[in-house]
Amino acid sequence: MSQIGVDRWVEESESRQQQYSGWTAPARRAFDKVRPGWRLALFLGLAALYPLLVSPSGVRIGITVLILAMLALGLNIVVGWAGLLDLGYVAFYGFGAYFYAIVSSDQLPAHWPTWVAIPVVVAATALLGALLSLPSRRLVGDYLAIMTLFFAQVFVEVVRNFSRLPGEPTDITGGPNGITGVDPWTVFGFSFNTFNRNFYLLLGLLGLLIVGLYRLNDSRTGRAWRALREDTLAAEHMTTPVNRLKMLAFAVGAAIAGLSGTIFAAVQVGVFPNNFMLVFLITVYAALILGGLGSIPGVVVGAIAVAFTPEILRNPGAAGWLFYIGLLTLLLVTLRKRPMVAAVVAGVVAFGYLLRAASLAIWGDTILGVPNDTFTGGFLDGWLLILGEHQDMASNYAFVLAIVGVLGVILTRGWWRVVALIPTIYLAVFVWENKLALQPSITRQLLFGGVLMVMMAVRPQGLLGTRRVEIT
Figure 1 (tube, rainbow, N blue to C red):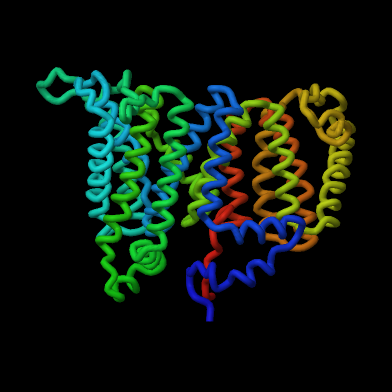
Figure 2 (cartoon, rainbow, N blue to C red; figure 1 turned 60 degrees about the vertical axis):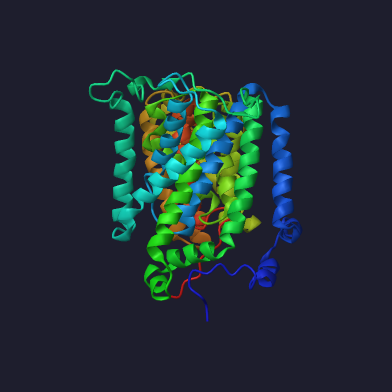
């Protein structure tokens, strides 16, 4: 009899390996045989080479990736393991950053040494997380999410407007201008005052955090959190201390967020209210969902993908490669049969020729624009419409139709899916070449939504998450 919501990794190891197919199957079987410790060592070793291969701006991006990975791992405890929908998580990150900035700058002035400031900030953030968990004794699901979201919004308003205490001249939060001149981390006289040093500091902390979370996941607490996630009532009837576990999950997740916030403030040499808006919370959740709820390596992979993708899209040529390779990958994953993939590609080109011929017969050459200078070269000539007049309006309508087409692809099977894919792929290429390739700022936002939507439809458990087993 199938168990409900259980990660049956050990029990299904042999059958899982037998299911691997294709040219990647040997590599995936070999990867399964590598112990988690060696996988982590390999990841850390490769990551350590990154600053040696990129420019200082690239190192700065790497720092952003590592901070996002730490935040996503902390959120994974609350959401992925304990099953508590926390939408106020970014406030813990901001609290840690502001607390460290206040005690490690001229704001008070205080300039606490790092070995004093970090433990105090982390402990205070954990305490704040424990206090926020108190309403979770009565609130669950959407109600808990609304309450924590309100807490996140209150935090932003407080740091933006509550700059001074009544009757006191001391500036606490800096208001809309934030706090600048934050001290870097200094440990045993060694100052982490460069991008490279902060990158290796974060890499080391991330490695220690991953090791600690693996041990925590295999402990009684980790198993109790998963029991809480699957069925709170059943866990409580089995004498599991539900309220204490909720408080612990909030506190541990908040402590990790607070620690990440201290490094962020030190690297940026300042903190500002706009750093902790709802948009950043969505980014953290995107990394968590894309990688896979509950999966430690999946969360790290999701953070890397979410943080690097916007930077890749800043380069139009690289963005084009990413779009077309992603489109081809989506075709291969969706159809899995080469004849169907070939049929879709041929159908898209034929559909494009027919549509172009019909458009020229009705409106003539007046609707045509100049093709974009993309790496595709002459591949698009002849079958893809590049519009000149009314380009934005046509692209907007095509984008809406492409979304409808994606829903049609999800709901159909077999050759009906092939038929639905042909106009959908054409519309996607049309929108890309006529609008998105020319407006990278819009593209970065839409790509997040598009990737997450496709991921939730094709692989709901995320890149490295484990599929849940349900009895229907």
